[in-house]
Length: 363
Image 1 (cartoon, helix red, strand yellow):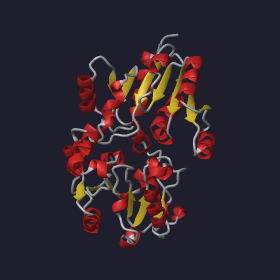
Image 2 (cartoon, one colour):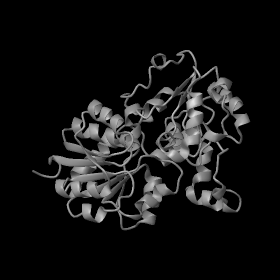
Image 3 (spheres, one colour):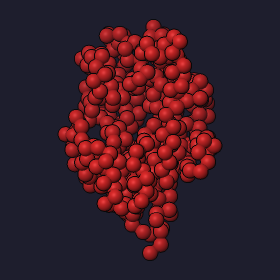
Image 4 (cartoon, one colour):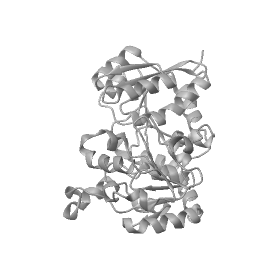
């Protein structure tokens, strides 16, 4: 039996729940092509019951671990063909004694950490587009990077995800739908007023904050605002069970965001975006320490900004939303030009390219 027909065993390391939307398209393609079996490694935490629901819904083969050391022991025992990681992993050298490894990032945002995650090399990293692949090759000439595209968007492009039934979640199907998808830090959340939804009453508002905003104690002030907004009848606030951004991307007509990878994913679908330039920065990122913020962002941060219209302050937001809802094609040419650079080929076949590579290079 040659490499092309060998059934593989693939393991997905799910250190955080929000890694799943990137893994699942690959998993479903693996099953569809009958190319092998897959296991998921989940880390115990505050959302175990939610993960259990997802496991049952997706019919996943799984194991629970408490930490990365336990995960490593499992990998050494299983000797899988490939182990997937969405971030760096401290025990790669041990994993590589028995398996090959993959890095598949969960987002395509403007943060410098997108590149530094490869400081410790996996056997291969799958990348979105030739531009970023070239940058990786320059930064890490001895490592392997393969341009496959952005598989997280495959379900939307292939019409496998229809988005929300707006009426079913209490919204008005006759209203345009806004998606507010801020990141956790630096974030615009604290710069929005308590009556934000009332000021946009002519729209449905889907709010999809970062997983950390909903789960980490240090972002408690963000949660207080989010829970307040949830009380308005034109708002649907994502629950932790809404772990995937994909249905939100499919459902919205316009996105409001900040320095979040969600912004670029939405723009890659050729939908209008408003980028909030007003952010709540910790004192250690302001004034003479502003270099820390710049260091946190990618060198292309300024160029990427062209993909959206910008609200310098909250008071500009209403007029910009109205303008972009009425003229959604205003920045279409720019969005399409950046889509390839940000997300690679958007043909719905990124997951197929990943599985094909895994088959051809399985040891």
